[in-house]
Length: 136
Image (tube, rainbow, N blue to C red; front, side):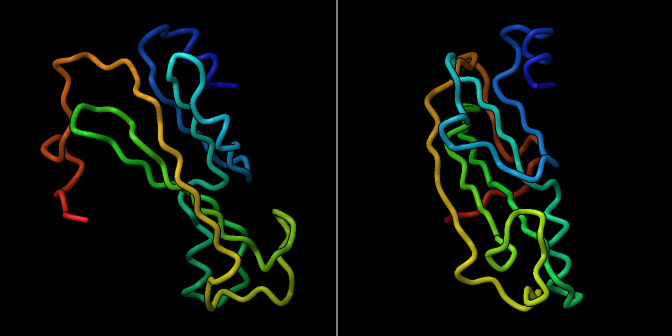
């Protein structure tokens, strides 16, 4: 809802919104709308549930994404991950769900974005404070 308001208040200035803490990712077919605008909604912010692995506590479901950005500042793709909680419904943590390992309950999908409108003279890179580039 806030993403819609941001686009309304700043027309033509926002190519992507990212929000979370709603306990469910939006569907892949809802990621990029008309005009190329991307709305990425995550199930978790910060993946705090991953900390339970170290503590040996029961783990909640976790959802997160890793997005790629090209040198010309195009959002090119996103890899979306979902780690279930022992096959239980979202939000439920069964007694048998331990934080020792993830296996069959991990899903990942890759979504490729259509090009967005980006100024021709704009460039993105690691020199802007993102970090050192590394080969695949």
